[in-house]
Amino acid sequence: MKIGIIDADLIGRKKHRFPNLVCEKISGYWKEKGAEVYLLMDYNLPDFFDYVYIAKVFTDTPVPDFINKLIGKKDNPNEKVKIGGTGFYFDKAPNLPAEIEHHMPDYHLYDEWIKNEVSRACKEAEQKGKVFNKSKFMTQFKEYTDYSIGFITRGCFRKCKFCVNQKFDHVFVHSPLREFLDPSRKKLCFLDDNFLGCPQWKSLLEEIISTGRQFKFKQGLDERLLTEEKCRMLFNSKYDGDFTFAFDNISDYELIHEKLKMIRKYNQKKSVKFYVLVGFESTDAKDIENAFKRVELLLCYRCLPYIMRYMDKNNTPWKQSKYRALYVTIARWCNQPSIIKKMSFRDFCEANQALHKNKNTLCSAMKSMVDFENEYPEIAARYFDIRFGEDNLNITK
Image (cartoon, rainbow, N blue to C red; front, side, top):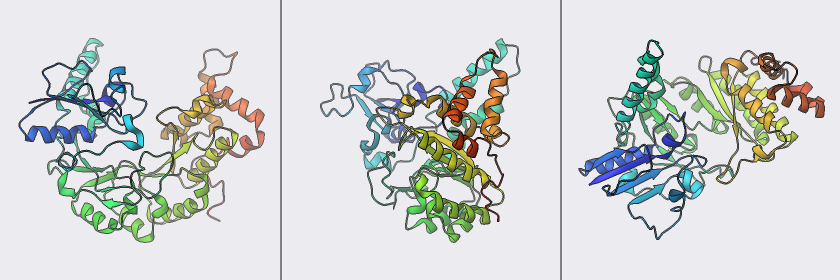
């Protein structure tokens, strides 16, 4: 048997650097059956493959038209080609067969690709007369080389309309840790949808901590479910990198404010990041104001905001907004920690203007800020000069 596997996001997204767990599980399953498995880097599908599996996570990852035509077709004209993932089906993605879903991932599926990437970068450095720093270059592949990856729980009860996770109305234990734990890998990465919503969260977290490994929840955690006990365990654990949460709805403002106080009480060392969803409820001035209001609260608590511009499987509403350039500028300001820690939004726009080649015109960042300030001076006065770590809301008083 010869099996081809295509990670569509790896091919279609230049900066994509995270393994597709489905691809690794499929590879592990077929290798155990003695098949030859190949990670394919294009869509030229040779006839000698018995099956070709194509997985896609992101809806905007481009794939050839003949692949898109297979979506949802029960009478697949090419039985050899099988597609799956939220990138194709959004919230209606079919489940993997149990024997694949619960198979140990093949953590070596991407080895040859990484080797080729290193070789390519080394040759490019030599051609430019530069010294190739392999150790530094390899950091971008850490999720491929250092982590055991899996879902210890699945499901969520929130039913957020913008989320692809709509299949379940509760959180439940999904896989035993041993199912995907590779003893040779020093770290753990969990893709759980809402771990803290699982009734067994404590025993599961205790098991994770008992491994002695650093760990992280890639999709973030639901801060609205934090309690004193959860905070004590989480913030005293060997957590890997930033603690990541989400501030999607302005309606949660007061609740999240209370949870931020709790986080501050138990966390003094680790960086905390919040995904901030914009462009979902609307793409008007009110949405811009709500975004800044959430960012302001996070900055007061020295938390890093990360702007997530909403998109669904069919469109990206913010791109049709009159404030499109402003959405881009806010994201550029917030999503670079080294910048937002030092600059207010106004500072950032002025810095962009200073680098603009044509001094007689406004750069896109400056123009988006000036136009909005002229239209809504009261919003600009309230938020354009807020800074990281400053107590703009008098939260300590």
